[in-house]
Length: 599
Ligand SMILES: *[C@@H]1O[C@H](CO)[C@@H](O)[C@H](O)[C@H]1NC(C)=O
Ligand SMILES: *[C@@H]1O[C@H](CO)[C@@H](O)[C@H](O)[C@H]1NC(C)=O
Ligand SMILES: *[C@@H]1O[C@H](CO)[C@@H](O)[C@H](O)[C@H]1NC(C)=O
Ligand SMILES: *[C@@H]1O[C@H](CO)[C@@H](O)[C@H](O)[C@H]1NC(C)=O
Ligand SMILES: *[C@@H]1O[C@H](CO)[C@@H](O)[C@H](O)[C@H]1NC(C)=O
Image (tube, rainbow, N blue to C red; front, side):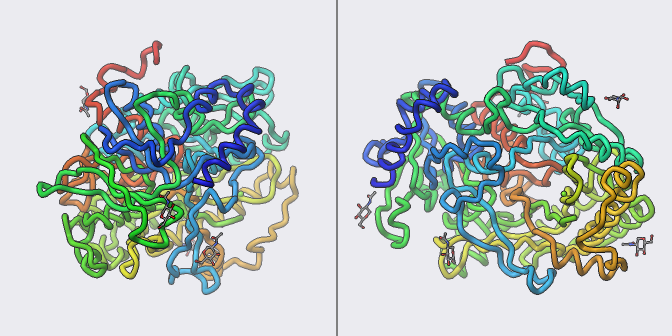
């Protein structure tokens, strides 16, 4: 393949400085992507997707030398140095992303209806191109997963995996003293693959913004990563502070094990479908080389999976691959002329992301964002008919599942130890990004019935539920209150440029939110949800897809409710736990989280 050899050539030019800086990458020099001719006919496990979760599971499953693993990734290795350069946050190179936009969001302003759908197409996935935010949701967020009928998936069940996937780098003492930086070593690993650090370059005026939040009642936490993700705290970044470079799934999980003989990674191929036998047991996949996908029939290769097919294609493509394989909403599959193997309406529903309104980590309970209105808002949400604002495709079971989510989310909105809004902040004043951490609206991802091989149709359904819009306007008001605090106004003397003080009535604020909201923080999730089948779920508590055998999902699609955090660290924890579930281990049993000794 021409592309592959070009990549290898580039790598050679860069290999000296990179290998010096990253000894763990040296293994990768020996064995990188295999050539198509080297792919074997069968493996124990075939993993679809060499992104963040796929590389975690590939690493853990191939620890057993008797087990063989193939990872099939649509993207390529990105060897450009700027993938590691932390100045290049939110890297916007087109060759490492899919190219698609959403269907029109009719609830939004006319010029704002077609929204971007950022999704990585590169070895390492989202962790290779994200902003490296590395915080966790509140304990309540994950406990809600468990309450939806998923034993073992609460905060206690996930914490060992948050620990296992990370190494905390302790901040420099002088920096920590100057900014009163706090953390808790107990909730991080000492030798995990992903480096977590607190970025040590800060503006002195940060202290004023911090004080401004405190004036409004936000409480300082020692850390947000022990389940107390509310109030003010120092969030870690997935940055290796020793080299000031990105720490991501490729450097942490793939490079150190790339020379394993039982692990193959193939890049530049797309998984088309999962194949099944008469008993609905998965037998493998059909895949197609990326340079020939314009012809749906060219270069299709079948690979057998002796044990399981593992979906790690992300919340965007995992449901599409299931749908293409005949597992999904029957009405949709019939429209696309795909034989229905399992009518599983939840595949592609329950889609959640964090919408953000612009004005620029504080995680604020609704009671703090909106002291006068928060009970009204939560109650108006709880008293909604639960099916009122759902996508029209929802079945009775899916509606029942959402009714359960509604009860849980409604009470989370009333809690003081969980958040409704995230405001990452720095000491440079200015711009606030207000992220809704508990979106109540639900979107969908469906294959395009006219062409199941084209990119899927993405409907965020942003502000589909009107309470989301009200919470966004309350967030605007909070941003203004923060500007008005003694600490912030005396330090920055801020002038509101956008939306501008003339935008004052509820109606005007709502219009501003509709006109300026961004539907996504690239936190797409929920589209193959961990929930009982009778509540519209797609996978059971062991991540097995209902109605078939030998297929599991291990990526952000399984999150039944989006946690109030950037997703990266939760994706690692979920994938680590998934690997143990697949291996039939139970780490939470072996590993009490108070224990000092850790892997
Ligand atoms: C992305 O897709 C659009 C429309 O489908 C197309 O016009 C554009 O050229 C594509 N961009 C890239 C970089 O492929
Ligand atoms: C530093 O943080 C601790 C809590 O983590 C708090 O008790 C203390 O008051 C803070 N000190 C300053 C100077 O802000
Ligand atoms: C894919 O098929 C085309 C012809 O259909 C051929 O020219 C090309 O070499 C094939 N590529 C691979 C990787 O097999
Ligand atoms: C919130 O309270 C303000 C008055 O403080 C009121 O004008 C506004 O309509 C309320 N919003 C909601 C959504 O209840
Ligand atoms: C793991 O062990 C704990 C404690 O015995 C138990 O509560 C939990 O259900 C187990 N989880 C799995 C996935 O077996």
